[in-house]
Length: 231
Image (cartoon, rainbow, N blue to C red; front, top):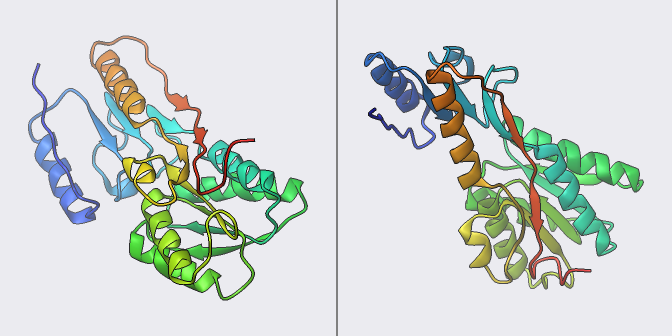
């Protein structure tokens, strides 16, 4: 058995070119991670293909995270600190929308609303988000990605806001970056290694004609200094 690998670096045109190139080799199956071209990707509904965190719902074989539950975990952590002026920094796409939906639902149970800012998962957009949100009352921010959260932390630092004493911050993914920031970032962990292993096992089962089912992973909140000590 041999494997072909391709990376698009989040560029839709490169992704399409890579997909057509791989399919010309008459492969038996494969794994698509975070596709940026949606329904246009030739492999979207081919048998033997597994999709990790797909933008399109309803694909037959998927490996996903329960993003709504991740949003709920973030909200509960911020509410634990009795925060009341809350905000969400998101980005385009289904994953961010699901994270916001869980966050909003948990806040609604507490009778609270929030402000929102649309970024693009980059640190620069997080910086812009933090600067914009600081124009109003703010004591807690849930950010849909750790790199954006780094930008939010920078904006708070530049404005002299103490984290978590004045503003608490929760990120998403629990990337290695989260442990390197100051203060260290509380983040909703996405078990990337386990999700990758599950996708590989699912693809191999499909190619071997064995039974296969989609897998949904449960997120975990990793509490660090950006929200204060655990209760």
